[in-house]
Amino acid sequence: MNIAQVRRNDLKSSGRGSSPRRTQDYVAIALFLLPAVILFALFLIYPIFRSAYYSLFNWNGLGPATKFIGLNNFKQILTDQVFLKAIENCIIIVVLSLAVQLPLALMLSIMVGRDLPGRAFFRSIFFMPYVISEVITAIIWISMFSPDPENGFINALLIFIPGVHAQNFLGDVNQVMACVFLVLTWKYFGLHMLLDMAGLQNIPKEIEEAAMIDGANRWQSVWYITVPLLSTTLRTSVYLSVLGSLTQFNLVWIMTRGGPVNASEMMATYMYRYAFIRYQLGYGSAVALVMLAFCLTFSVAYLWLNRRPDPLSGI
Amino acid sequence: MATIDYRKSDAFKKKLPRFFQYLVLSIVTLAIVVPLVIMVFGALKTRGEMFLHPYTLPIPPHVENFAQILHTPSFWLMLRNSLLVMLFSTAGVLIVCSLAAFVFARMEFRGKDLAFNLLTLGLMFPITVAIMPVYLVIRQMNLIDSLLAVILVQTAFGISGNTLILRGFFLSIPVELQDAASMDGCSPFDFFWRILLPLARPALAAVGALTMIVSWNDLLTPLVLLNSDKFWTLPLGTMQFQGQYSSDLALTAAFVTLSALPAILFYLFAERQIVAGLTAGALKG
Image (tube, rainbow over all chains, first blue to last red):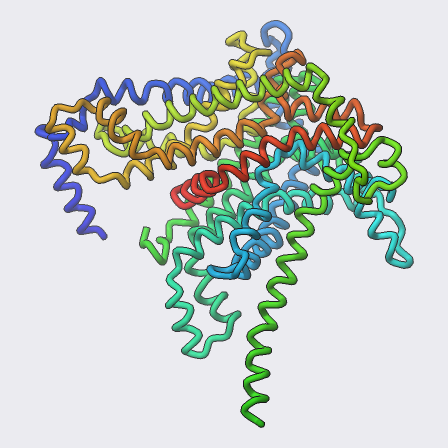
């Protein structure tokens, strides 16, 4: 690996200067990168600094920001019970996703396997919710969860069970997070399953067969062969899932507005309420930066933990 | 006799897991499909039927709900806005990202690795985190309440992921091709435009399909950046409609069905491209 790297660099540098491909045409490079750089700088880099500036003010968005309050916004956010509840809820969703949603996706993708008749059909169906917008998903599930069995299908099924009454679901402080998680799973497990299925395609069948011949049973072969070989895909799934859970907004906002009594508050719904409903733009900026800190911390930790190479490709 | 028994149980052993596989997969299929079917059935009922028999088959089907929505001008306006935003965002992403991906795949310059790492950093900022800062900048640019703002923001947040995907595809096109073209006097832009892009058509289709879905379904960007209802996109309008007509379940169901239809049709049509885009993105990111 190292030798190959050095050789390749040698080749590259010897080709420089008289490069037949004119790969160092700086005018072309600048022109090609220009649109991306402008958009990137304007909408990803610059806004962060802008937000960092306003996060130090008590500012309602009207006129220039003048009430400088230092780090008070941050102090207030990190001591606000509602925001702490939002962090807790985000972490609950992260943990449930990793513990339930991803294993479910993996189990189903192994079940569908490489050659089950009807494989393409199941993949198409399971992935469909991912394509349907979160707005539509949320509206469909609001009606599914309706406390009135005449409108809510789940309650209509539940009251068939003797001794079970209709539940409040989204209106119940103790049930709302479970409902939110169920909807998130409905919408997103197909994506993870799709990724797992693509990853499974890259694992040579012979390795599993060899394990079977050596006496491994189905579970052993899945646990000791398939899962480790699928680690690159699984890591990607974990990354997408955690980042998505930390920043979940649309589904929760439409289904519950973070309620009842903040029981399903997410960091993003908290930010939206302060920034765009109460128009406390300084405070909202500070919340956005706190969320960003969460995402960055996770990303850095993820990158740091994932320096191990992929067992199949070696990268 | 004993051998027959043995064979029988062996065949049974093989078939039993298959049966369980299909059982589990069918249950999951039902869980996915039933909510969608209930919605479509609801849309085909009158308000009264919806009240009396919410879960029965819609016999005879009523199309009045659909007709009512298709006769409201605001539905067509939302459809138009969504289409405009989607087309321009997708075109923007395709142009900006293929240019950048070409440089990262095929050109050399100092600081390339740094620039590339900076680009991948963009993956760590989902739009939800960035929307508040972005709102401040759009305000400063006086672009609040315009479709252009939505298009620019959607394009900007599509750059990181899609450039990565396209770079992967571009890297897989043989270098010799560029050498040959270069010797024949082909400039980098000519090579990019006349040779690379036509060859990368499947990749462009994948990125395009994916971007179209993301843009079509995006709620947060229009929600934050648009005020007047004449600019509302379909997701934004759907959300407002649900709030306004929540008592008329059949009409809401019809509206939701109509606004889900384009995405589902597009999915059935372009499933291969969407799947290719997603898996390429995930395996390279």
